Length: 203
Image 1 (cartoon, rainbow, N blue to C red):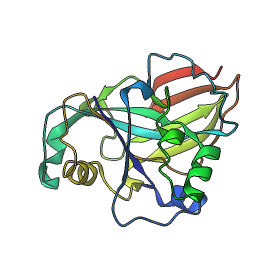
Image 2 (image 1 turned 30 degrees about the vertical axis):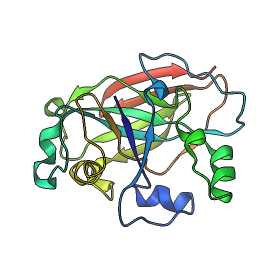
Image 3 (image 1 turned 90 degrees about the horizontal axis):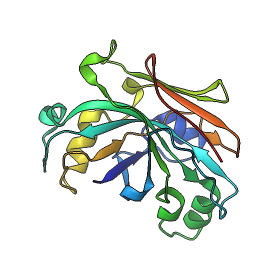
């Protein structure tokens, strides 16, 4: 099972981090050891002092494929959830400043939170899915998938040129504006439309 992540897919998020707007999807991977599910707590790692949440819609691949044409890409996913791409912002900044890869800041253990999946057909507004994150009961991120620069279908068509998509692979599709730090004791809850899909504590 692969975890494929897309960066800078919402223009407002790219701007808030002073990143360039990409002309192609920015792709990175996380190992399966990054997965955190079933509302298990996130344990703050000792090697960072600046862990940020990045809330994203997550697709689950339902069919194996390679070199998928964009017009057929919708056939390759049936379920969606919300996840968090935890990022060690301090390590990321250090690595980027040296021109080095930043997997240690993105792909560490338990850095890929994922909630309960829902069938796309069960959503009331599947044409423009809303998702949000509450931090200690306060809404800090709120997004709609139609605001993505690269659609679900464009993402699948693009990444399948490089990686064979397999059943069960997860695709994190990028975060809207509003990312920020977490601290020990924080409680995070995410919603897919009106459905609460995960709720956990930082320890």
